[in-house]
Image (cartoon, rainbow, N blue to C red; front, side):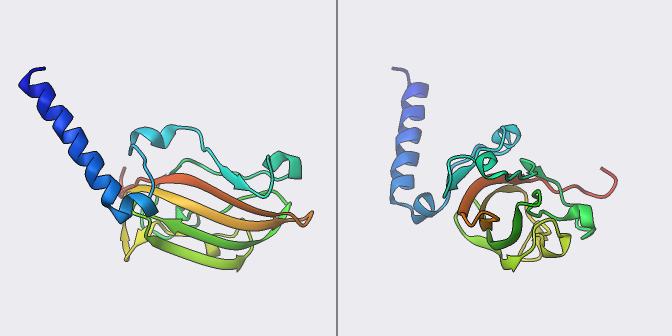
Length: 157
């Protein structure tokens, strides 16, 4: 093993040992930003095995590109068909596990209840975990978790 390989192995071991002791690793999530941003959305679903079995369709993107204008199209929101009347809870967390946005008891598809992509009043690039809780019209309580990437756009491109 040469010096370069030894340093690499040492760095990996150091990183792993730091991660295992860090509360961030326990409360946050792992994500290769921005590479994983274009991967199809993968849901973690509790309550049912498949959204389509309940007739639910969510219209979501894996990337959200706010430009800070707070226009309707500049808002992340839960978009669905008519099988969801009320979102019980929406919680958005950064990669460290800190909650950056939360909202309760609101209708889907309404930009007035969406997130503008700001953390502490600033547009902040990165992956964010979306946790959503709602009840289907059939009375089934559903919890979803998935990742959305925020890549702010600046005026003019």
